[in-house]
Length: 382
Image (cartoon, rainbow, N blue to C red; front, side):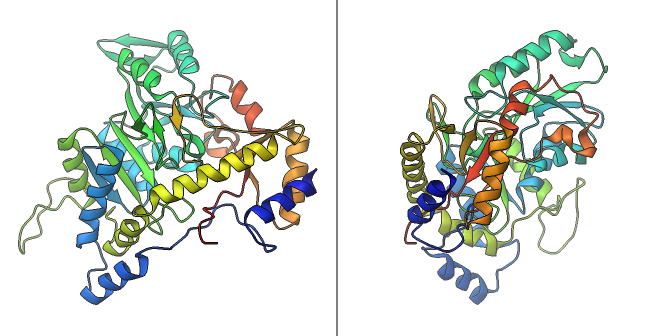
């Protein structure tokens, strides 16, 4: 069976060579725009492509303001600063996530609390969040506190896992009831929509990543999405060292951050964005091909987009029957020219977060023992 899967993937990607998990594709104006940066010498944080990329991402996602950063992790850090998360505050999030989510929480000095995910979204479960809050939290003068630790519960950070949207509208309502800020980790979900609205535009702040392995890339980079334009302007100010505009004087009015995306990276992003819809449609077609193929394979389930969603299928997911099957499959495929990987190590299994509170993580543990990511690159012109 594993040999049939390996052969199918090699055929799908029309190669007998090693098939990576997700490789970038450059088929548009990337070289043209990069040459323009070099010819004009605007390769650093000032240049027309920075403004253009922000404006075009805002238009595409439906955000009122977008602010680029040098990485998705920097953008998450800034989102938490803007949400007024303080040292020793608690942040409700999922254990099934990339470590950047929890690293950014740690930069603030806040404490993650890990809540279970839903099997049908792979993302933070509204039901689990509500149950945890009803059991462990209380409102005092309009502020949410953990009755066990005494800490303020300041924020909730769901992550749209592998590009599949969570039930974000339900989370918005719960957070509103409990006076908790909602920050969307939409790092993996450019091009994904929930009930017709782009991910990253539901909460106080949303964050998208443009790392080299994402659906579109700026080499490295991220972006903050806002529906509050004033907050977006503050983010732009803080991420550019909080420098007060002046022709020659260097005056700064806040503690600022050098989180500026260089023009040369934004140029790459502008070119990539021109082909985003082609890439997403290609990836959705690939997912449909996988779905039909795995329907013929016993004991392997292909994960499809949740209800009410248009997923970008950033990384395709299959679910094996158990941990042994997962490990056997990972070994066989990687030994035979097809890159596969399990989900990230669950956050509470890492030394830095092993003492953090959890709700038991029943679905999370079940999925971690079975999920395998399979090759998901765009296949256009390959």
